[in-house]
Length: 426
Image (cartoon, rainbow, N blue to C red; front, side, top):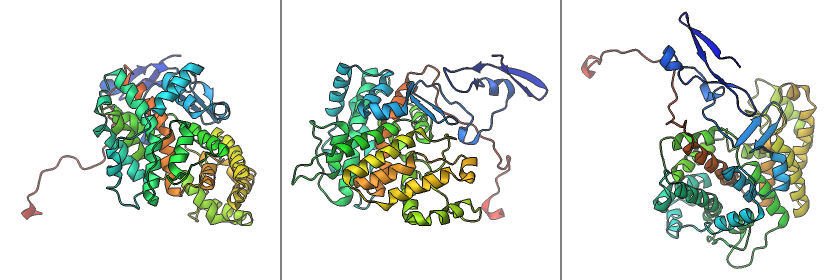
């Protein structure tokens, strides 16, 4: 493909057009400022590629999500979260022996330093789990000094394993602390997901039996949230990492970004919306409100910043909801309301024209609520799963020869230089 041509102040410039293995071409403008004295203006960086990556590919128009080339639907149906974690970190699906070794390594890193229990007790009992996770993950660098040298590949690997392994323990302890129950230590005989469920819902007084359908559903939820290309929190992790910050600080930054209601809190908002609607017979009323430009009501869980087609994760999630409800014998009108709302919206010209299809958040909140998680834990679970993607993205960034410290530019619209006026003369 020929170079892209740019004319500024009656001067012509040419910039290379780069092609990836799939997806849109990009114009390489790294030399643009030096040559022209001008920046590009792209609020939200929605038309800017900030890095090269081999991890995740999204085609929002076609509803495609690939991890290392594998379709998310196939991974969610046939794989496990640990296998997907290995894939994202290493680039290929593991052999049986490689998977066993990886699972054993992660399992043996699930315990937290004992002094961190004291750290938890410094929070108020009503602290939001995400507030606790931000603090605890950031504090890991104060406990694990032997894995903060980002120039050492071995230390990077150990830090990666620690973060993936300890996040379920951190999240479960945040929940236990909020409800006043004692912390449970990890059980190495359980799977990654089963162990998390036991640490969250088990108590020391009796044995906890992991429900197979719930374990499978949670594992799928983790897979569906493992990575999602250069979203806000992933970009935050990369930006923090570009300064040379230690991996624990970088992931804590990602958690802080994910906490925002426009990012990780969407499933909670979707569940609250379904509760507000209540029963299927009230759906037409709320659809009418959603169409009314003068009504602030919005249908949460519909539409997506990237997907302009059906979110491929939502297809798997809808099936998973039914499996969980059948297994737990849940009779919840919320699910019937969700199904009816989806049906009506997909057949409404307004939503079809605007491509407002259900996304992964539309169903995940219903599932998590049925399993027993309070809404305050929804984003914490998202952070748990997304840690795998963050860690993989961070590792990729560290080894990228083109990586530089992040430094977005701006279009300055403030006052020009002016003299200082002493306070007595103002």
